[in-house]
Length: 171
Image (cartoon, rainbow, N blue to C red; front, side, top):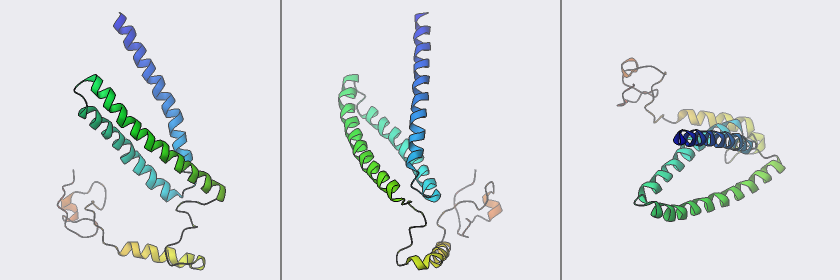
């Protein structure tokens, strides 16, 4: 009976903690995207969600596996790694907070229309965007992605969307 009470208490505490972390963390992350264009926001969110979250979990697993001989060893050495990572994150948060305040005060939008490709002036805004798009279309596609979702290698003739042979098998 006592173990059931402990289990129930643990599940409730984890649920409440997870709820509060999501309620605080997600809106805070969204606020940071305010001074960015939608394209930059999309790319940054993808990078943060994929590499940031998965990378931190991988680092935690590496530390746990490296110092798992004893609980004392894990606590002592893991604490050093955690303090190093926390120091880096505090420094980074302080720097990014200053940049955020600077951009919000000035109205600067990262990736917005106020950024032009190198070598163009404000009068060349329309041509700069057009030339940039044409230049991106001329670059050969290096991916082996299937042109349409759900197509098999047989349907595309074993080629990617750019016409290159692809040795990956669609599943």
